[in-house]
Structures are given as structure tokens and as C-alpha cells.
Amino acid sequence: MSTDGGRDPIATHSRRLSLAVHLRDAFTGNPLPARTLQTDAAEPLAADSFRRRASRSNRGRWTEDDSNGHRSSGGPVVRIRGRDAEPVVNPSGYLLYFEEDLPREGEAVLVVHGGERYADDEVPVDMETLDPRAPVVTVDLRPRPAYRFPPGATLLRGHVFVHTDGDLPEELSPATDGESGVAVRVDGLEPSAQTTRGGEFVVPVVDLAAADITTDGSVTPGREAPEVVVTHGDWGSGTVPVALSAGEATCYHLVFVGENEVRFRQCGDSVWQEPPS
Image (cartoon, rainbow, N blue to C red; front, side, top):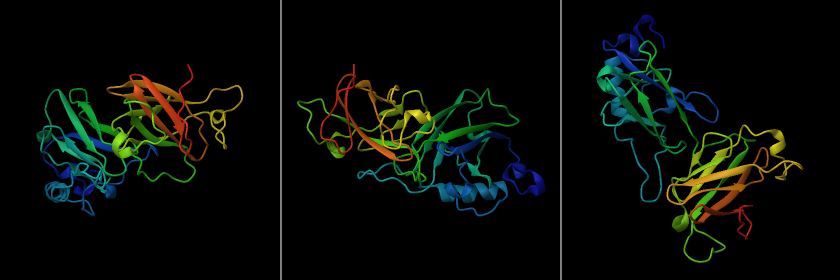
């Protein structure tokens, strides 16, 4: 963040900078450029002018899912829980908060609305442990199913359902049986993904050994299939094996049939399976 020539908002603001939020794409590891954030400022402005302009462009774009499950197609928006402060977005894409925007002591909670491509999140920040000379916090934005993954990405996609009433039918509906807010992860890897409305999820797989995934989805002889852990706030958790295809999207459906009881099948199959004991 430059302070040369009075062009950077940090340098032209008379109040002390308390927090700089750095948004990073969790899949690529790259920072989000300023143009993807919710501001229409095309060039650096003096701080007060920048704040007014950014505030006008941000206001009204905090949009929750509507009744049809639609979300804002805009970039991520960050708010401080319990505060009405609009951040200043500098040309490098950092969201800047000043001392009057934040509590002086204790914890500030960043509430992140990820838009169409990123998951919502909440990030607590201990204001007392931040370095006042460089108060930067990095927030990794996890992809949602609508994220545009590059060709050749190894992905696990699918749906999580809940069906605890009677026999398990061959087909389940995302509209009636899909479950949002369920954590899905490949065992041993982080972070987890959260299911969206309708139970849809996507987990990018980037750190498995080459021997664990093959081009045809089979499991290398002598090795065990990767396992997926699914965790529900009310129905507990379950672990199921999956066969992943390198460089492709592999699809599985998972369903809770009772507490800590999960059945699974690969998309396109008609038979639900029990995890091996």
C-alpha cells in the first residue's frame, strides 16, 4: 500500500488505520483484485471522497438468498457485525477500516457475504493482538458450486440429503430433501465446503497424492479410496469412500437416514450403499 504522492487513501486520511482486510481466493491462493469488489471507483481517490463514493456503491448490495435461492452476482461484501461502517477499498483491493469503525478492545467479527461464487463466512478478529503497524487480516474465500473452476480441476460435487422417514427412495429431490449448511470435506484435507440451498456442494481436491486418484476413477491396488466426511448439526457425521477421477468432476449423493447414519451412491447409480464397517 503506497504512501507516495498522497494518492493512497491511507496516506490522505487523518484518522488511524485499524484494520486492512485482504480477501484471497482459497482455490487459487490469489488475492481478489479491486475490480471484483463492490465499488465503482476506477482510480485512487482522497480518503473522504473514496469513502463517500464506495459507500454509495456498496449500499443496498447486501442481498441474502431470496425465496428461489438466487444470490447477488456481484463480488464479495464485508461488514463488521454490530457496526454500520463502510470500508474504504484501496486500489490494491484491501478493505480499510479506521479506528472509529471498530471496537477499541475485544473482538470484531467480519461478516462476509460471498456473492454467487464464494461461501458466506464469519471471521473473528482479536483487535488487541493485531500489529498496529500492519493490521492486516487475510480471509480465504471458499468456492461455492457456481464458482468457475479451470479445466482440469479435480472436484468432488454432489448433494447432501436428509431422509429419516421410512424406506429410502431411489430418487431424492434437492427442493424437498436437500440440506443446506452441512460440512463436506475430504478426510485429511482442509478446508471443508458447506452445502448450499438444495444441499449442493463442491469440494476442490488439490492435495491428494497422485496414487490416490486415477484417470478412470478406480482405486490404486494396495491403497484405500479417499474418504469423505459429512457433518450435520442435527444428524451427526458419517464417512464414506469415494473414487475420484483426476482432472475431472466426480459426483456423489449422500443422505442421512438417521443419527450418524449415512448412505451414498455415485451420481447415475440407482442403488444406495452403506459405508463399509
